[in-house]
Image (spheres, one colour):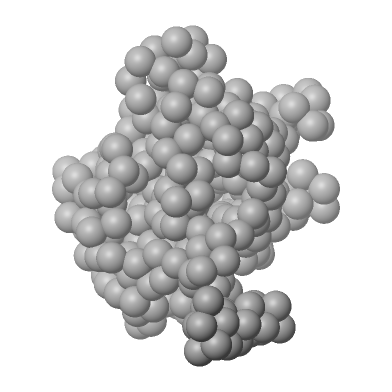
Length: 339
């Protein structure tokens, strides 16, 4: 070996031994993922994350750990845009992932085409939870606007849960009136007049209702309803309204951050695991409806029949609904300030 070559090799070895931490993160594949998720998905990921870790190890991928961050869906999206370095996001409506793509430039705008079922491996819906015996006789949306009924739901400005509830109430009244948007607005105004407190996320609303004892009825996702009943027994009853909204739970790799962490392959495999028979069964176990029709058929008897609409069919699209109702100065702001 000539002197020049030996000198170069020695220099490279010395650099690697002392400066490995200065290498780009994309060179150093991580054994850790961060999943930034919505508020009431905590329990499903307590089951899904260790199942994926075991699956990944069996595939020869080594030992990995998935960390979670939970909060109101829109609040979580803003955190990612502002620098929370999520490898993946798992939300309860596509609008929040669109914001990460468009405002944050952290993933492609066509993210919903990159995984099956518009990148939504599961879905839920809005149900009513009332106290045992249903003392206020709540059966449908009309009962929520009666005098003396206190309704608990999270803030639609910060929570996908709250947005779905708001839009479901609007669409119920609109259909009942024969298609008049004015009826939807008037109904939602009455509904918000019966809301004593707006928590920022679904879990906060659950705490307000179930632990603080505030309110006569909680509007929340079906999986949260199931969890409350499991934890608190027969203190509550479920009411299935005559019309409700389908709430798809979309997922995406945050490509810019996953690449920075060297996690692109791991992050993609993690989300693909959501669609496997094992992943779909975990969703069903946690009262989330699997998106795979075959998986849903196996557990259909576990879920009540629901009459649902989609935001796209009723409001044109999520971006249109956001602009009309939840953007600053939109219908929610006007109604809430005038209630």
